[in-house]
Length: 139
Image (cartoon, rainbow, N blue to C red; front, top):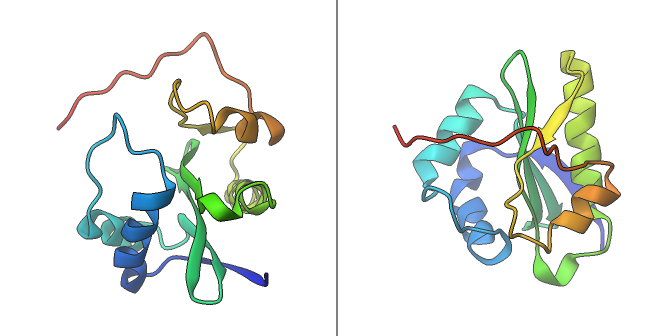
């Protein structure tokens, strides 16, 4: 396996959505769309990081930076490629991006019932912050 890592481009939107449909946790979230992926790539070209094996997407993470805080979303690794270090490398690259931008702390959006993801985040040094709750409102 020879992996490459790069930011997504607009032309990747359909492939990213297909990858997420088989590799990402999708409960409790709004529906994704190609237009939303394209807007993300347009507004922050380095935010959506891809891990590729040839032309095949095998991992993703969104490393969102709003100029103030560092946020991680959509860490996903192809089911047949898990436990090979792909997620760890995506997180490492996202954190390097944050440091280069001046970020000092990253948070990861992880569903409480996504128990498959908890060990991966813990292995990367993240801990659940009990003092906070996420409040949401559709707009």
